[in-house]
Image (tube, rainbow, N blue to C red):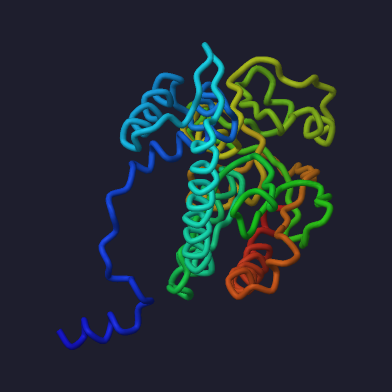
Length: 319
């Protein structure tokens, strides 16, 4: 009880006073949106509910208050004078709730590190390694978002993006991490274990296709005047291409950074000694203002040595 008394003495005056009965928050939100738009239909669209739901909420609110808040003229509505005054007060109150929520969440935001990267890179490179970062920084809650869509740092709560591209990201901090190369791989058991010995042996074999990984440049590097394959399994994600190859469904062209673990384990084998440079490089990207934050610096300090070690072991498959 002594603890309770001390706690109460530290709170603002009136803190422990019981609040009077309040209208339902859903009804107040419906009323505020309808008052702002002066339209039940537009309020329903904003709140992702039906016109009838908004009308019902406002009707119940008017009954609870004992007065009309809107004048109805067919499908058109207009605020009554008391309704307009009430709408201003309710909007101020809802904005205060939103501000208080933002302040509370901003404190937690400092402890949450959100990283966006491509699904293939997340699955094949980052996930097998990120456990060591989490162990080193238990104070951070790591959130990994896998998406092929570029991040809008001004609109999304993302701290870091790891992207394959040209590095042309105006207004952002961009740091090159890794070059890469493409080469063909397949399961050691593909075609009954009778693997092609030279590039021309690929004729008639099942070549897996990726939307952003064309075969024709590799054919040219191998001295083959062949068109881009138009038949066979087409997969959007490079990680799925590698999975299909590992399961014996065909031969795929893959980046060395994605194939590394599967090559090491023997799930796939590299074919031939012909490789081509990947036109996209791996970049570390963040908003300039976020670069000096403790959590971004912590991740960058862990990532760069990991990339350096990986680059060294990758060299054996890059040539």
